[in-house]
Image (cartoon, rainbow, N blue to C red; front, side, top):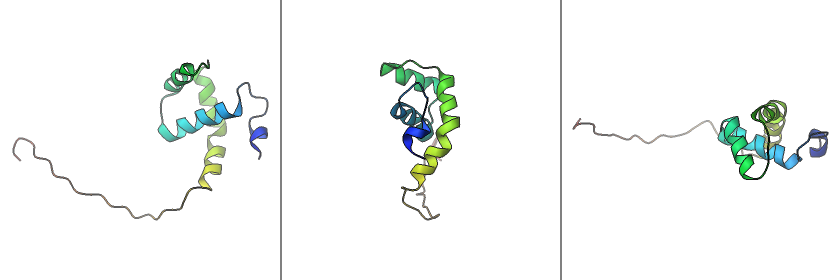
Length: 88
């Protein structure tokens, strides 16, 4: 599916929609925080609009991005850290 067809008939530009959905999926801010971030950039939209975009385009954008990510193995390490609290 081409980018233009994915966002056909939408009021906002495809770049704005994909950027907003990407921020929502990557950084997990609230929809109202995203509205505030867009207002700082001169765009006015409702939080419900962003919510609909995430529901409508989230899985499609994730699928497109996942193809370009490097595969990782399931192994990971955690360093142990000890903290003294009241001498213990």
